[in-house]
Length: 378
Image (cartoon, rainbow, N blue to C red; front, side, top):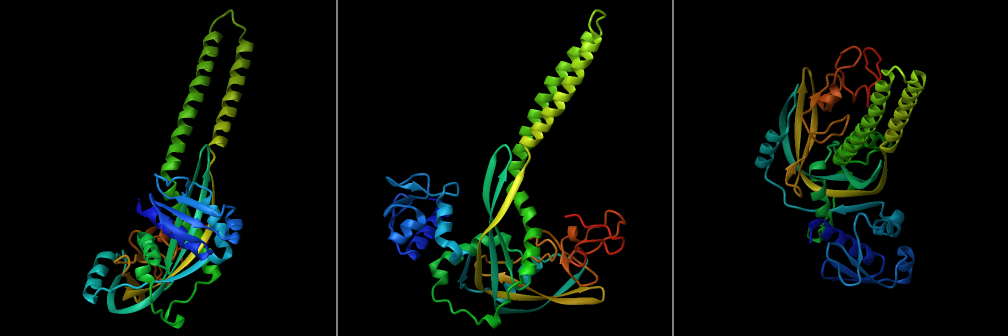
């Protein structure tokens, strides 16, 4: 049984039990459940139910996978109650000396320097947004994107979001956790900040998920365009050969040439419409995970300015979080520090203006170049 199917079975079992079902694990890789009337109606399922989560199914079991309709059934069961869930996890923290080495390896500032001012235990809140996307062209592709942020400073936790989710579902790490008071935790992001962060962060992650799908679609489009081109080029060459003959009706052949050219353009337009890619993304669930961390505070200096930046080492992932990008919320790469507000952004977030050539911080000026007013491309 794969790790993902085991987590799926664990999630489904806990969800059914939460709804009042009697649930028992069966092999191979399945669940058997007796559902109360209310659960039968919500799931549109019989009283006795068998589910399978891997390649081999128990006798009489229905397959549960990302492609099955059981995701939609579980969504109906969750309804609004499961759209935002909160977990608290616990784990052992590393000593400060190990955190110092992690900071030295992970922090890369292209145009600024930093000093590690202190390391101390703390608690933080992670917000994980789970999106479902659907891409439709000549084929269809569906999937899930998990977008996570540390609410303390906005670091994107892509490198270990799955590890954090596993810790949240592990009863050993969530049992008997003494949560800190909310005043000791980072505050919620405003709705406006979330509405800004998600549209900036999602496109690049969707492209990464759909890379193979888009490449395959492009190969099929190129193949079909080449076939259409070869066919109509053959018709054109044949008509040109006939035009060279003296006893051929030249006006008629020229009309054929024009008709073939129009048909060629129409076929190309049809192919482009066939392979047109339409992508929809929908938020399906929000998870909040409260976790202890080792917090390293960096004093970042750029020219005459300086700022303190908290950077957390997470015990569930046993690694330091990436530096935040306060423009694109990217999780990879080095960071550039802007002169005005000391924002940390990726090099692309401090790129040169297409019109005037001046580099500027997109976090400071998200819409237009501050020098010439050229609109920022997204």
